[in-house]
Length: 354
Ligand code: TXA
Ligand code: MG
Image 1 (cartoon, rainbow, N blue to C red):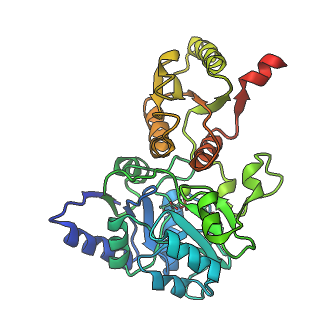
Image 2: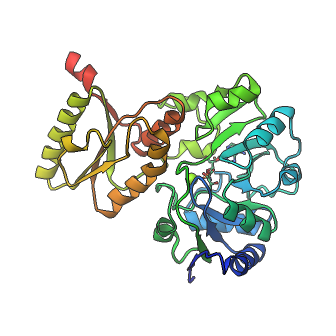
Image 3: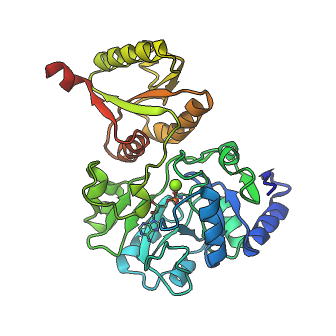
């Protein structure tokens, strides 16, 4: 299949949207930008389209898709029942990076929900995304537009790296503001449960609902309990290189990482470090990447996946990352980083004491 990459200009916008929408309505696949990451879109109400999405991603078909909508009333078409709590969250945070899990309505085929009787729905704030959804008939199923197991794409050219030849079209709308996938909240649980942390934090949700809980399986990497969002159990977001997170006091972390880098390079590996502007001078190795300032978490979130892709593209085989604060938006950042590392984390302080 020939995949067309199209930069969406103001003059051509209308014509491009019409064409992209007709591809979706005819059962094809189009990748599109959102404020979080690029999505790989197909008609959510067409079971053939959902099957094609799984195939293009190389993704297990028990991993359900998120339905993207452009108007509030469309929530009521795909959800069998919209609770008061769900309505309050949608009104407060939509359009935006929040996905709600609700009871599924009959018009949604089981192929789209991985056979579950619940459905995940979100209304993105990216305007191009919403217009694209409208031209596509209103219901676009879209996982992140990466091959299964690869970091989610934050740029159209990263979509092309993974999807060239597998889908009909890629709409290039530049880089999203957030860079991490949406927060997922299961509003069928009481109290509502966060299944995937994101830009909309637990504190923000609690301002609307009072009490909200986080899926315990996300907090304990041992995973004696399966996470409730099926996708969270797969090793996701992973770079090709082997990633280890190193936690502890700044100098001990730098000393540990530099020692490992020397060993790795002697063994013929290409090494990379993920650090901050304040610490980048401390490191050696082949590639040193800063996420920016430790205090500016929004910037860290925006840059993280891009850095993982860059390290891959530079052929780095051993990656070391500093740890970041796990509070607020930092919870989503550390969740993705830990998953990318397969939960490999070294605590330098404890090693010294022990
Ligand atoms: O920001 C985002 O949410 C991006 C953009 C493209 O909108 N999409 C995205 O989709 O991250 P995906 O497919 O990569 O991740 C969807 C997650 C998976 O972990 C999946 O298991 C979970 O949502 N999910 C979907 N439907 C669910 C359901 N009914 N119950 C529980 N988890 C569900
Ligand atoms: Mg994904």
